[in-house]
Length: 103
Image 1 (cartoon, helix red, strand yellow):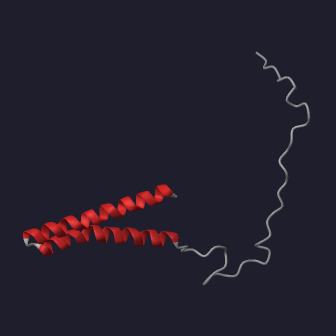
Image 2 (image 1 turned 120 degrees about the horizontal axis):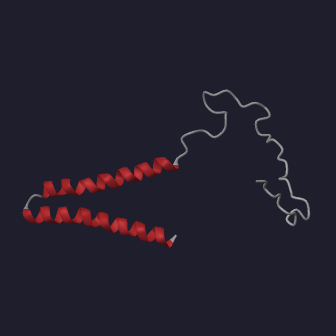
Image 3 (image 1 turned 180 degrees about the horizontal axis):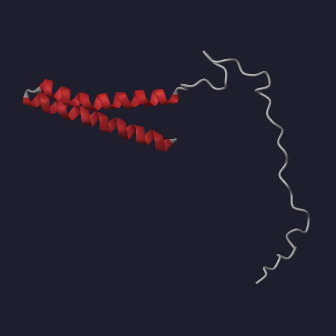
């Protein structure tokens, strides 16, 4: 968890630098509008990334066969098929000799 927090803080620091530098240079040179437009590009990219992540966390498909505009599921849809246990080798099967291959 600490690794994620460090990465997020680093990304925030990079975003602040990418915004502060064009605004500062624009204010010092007298081109504040150009500097603010240049600073808006990383902000727009960061907002689009946050929006993309927010939409990817949201479930877009209803789980299961039922839902709006779909027919209801059959009555036994929640019942799973019984599972059979895996086959177990009999005792002493490891000690059996391997069959010899013929020529």
